[in-house]
Figure 1 (cartoon, rainbow, N blue to C red):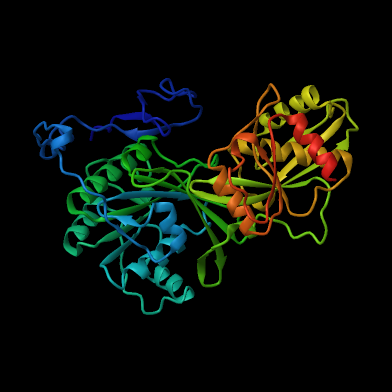
Figure 2 (figure 1 turned 180 degrees about the vertical axis):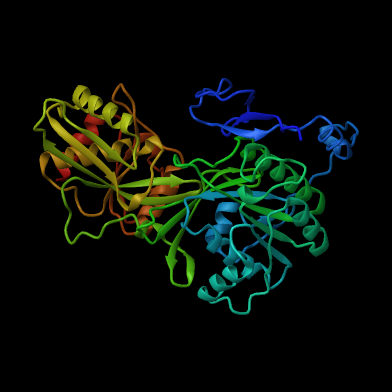
Length: 455
């Protein structure tokens, strides 16, 4: 019997080479080539012939289009991330670390949807009994969710055609395999092929499909990058396994806003939505402490209050440490240089540590001013006044630039009882906000001087 021909396929980009190499010649990634069995020309000759259906060319203005209808999942925080609910025929890809709660969240959502719609849960990693045990732990004893333990793509497609569910969950895409391919489940070719078939089935039948994806040790979704391009929505599950709080972040959404987040708390009865996430990220100090500053950040369409803490201490080594948790480390070095140049505050002989409380990651530049004022507060050893908050981007020339949607940020702060704010001048509202005293600034040195007068 002739030996099957093998090739080596990159799990990052999908490129192939006839022999193993340490570095992928297509994308430059190291140690990503995996051995797979090459397909013969006869096996894949007519595989896509039935899909090649010609469509006429039409003018864009003549195409009828209406707003997509959404079906609420029963979990408000999940609906917020999805843009209002599940879309008919939409394909959602959700990834996250093992044990963070992906299967738990989706089983809860399917149970809520199954009361009014037909649903299907396809598990490739667990047996039906294991899924039933989890449902019992979550208190879903009378759940009407249909369950199938299967990993072969063709059988799953047949089940979707027979059951015709409104929403189907595939847990997970890395466990599926197609009999058209000879490579192992989880390989680049199998993941790409199975996801493509499920996506076409969702678009043709109107069934909403949710794919659960594994992640690499760097935190990115495993498999080819084209997987994220094929689907309509990409969600990431974030959070520390040692904490009870979880964040679901939308990285891509064709039917809603990107970078929207949903906040959940892990309980004995599953994941519960957190209506006021600002309470998680604010520490409860009995009195104001030095080095602490509250920031109003924007996650998608939701303003959130996060406490930024800084610790400045004399360094025992010639090269002081600059450590940032939850914030961009390179931006911290830039802000220290701006403080030295434009405000006369030198930290070249000090260790500087900055942390965003609650494990949240802040990526927007509007956190610059809060980081600066927290560092200045820690260096002086004087706490900022009670009820103080700030936001604003800082430029290299020392100017304080406005942040988007400043009015919503200030209204959220006033609603939570904050009374004093230093904001960019361009973000100062025309009408005063009740209970909130605003101090507009244009430059870094003005903000530093204002803080000295307030404390």
